[in-house]
Length: 149
Image (cartoon, rainbow, N blue to C red; front, side, top):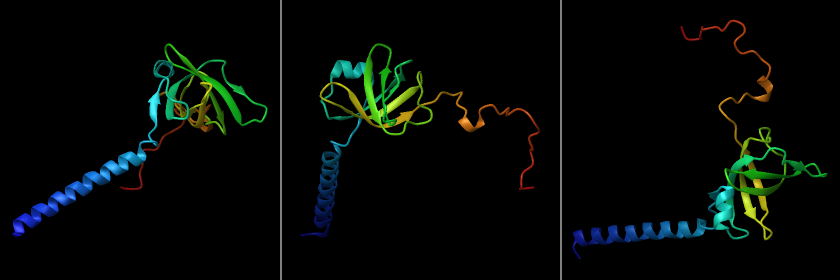
């Protein structure tokens, strides 16, 4: 076999191995993928119970109910047209309040309840950390000096 044919064979084998590794990785990760749904998407497409999904929307005003155990919370996530009941057991983020945006990772149970495993609270452009609330950031002198002269 000529050197040119050997190189071509090696390149083709490497390409086949690379494609095979990519397909194997995609197959292995297919059950771990979390697709983003809104409450309207859940109502329209009805994902299978137990399928990992990510739910996003706004927490409906007056819907947050905390259980007696202190760590379980139930609330309603709403988008423009539909709503989805969510339950979460754990410590909620500081920014998790009624009327705010939320993204929840979890699964639908057999009854259609979304069981969240993780909550991410979103904030708007007017976000101020709780520690800085009430502090007037415009008061006082602001130095313009730096360490580098």
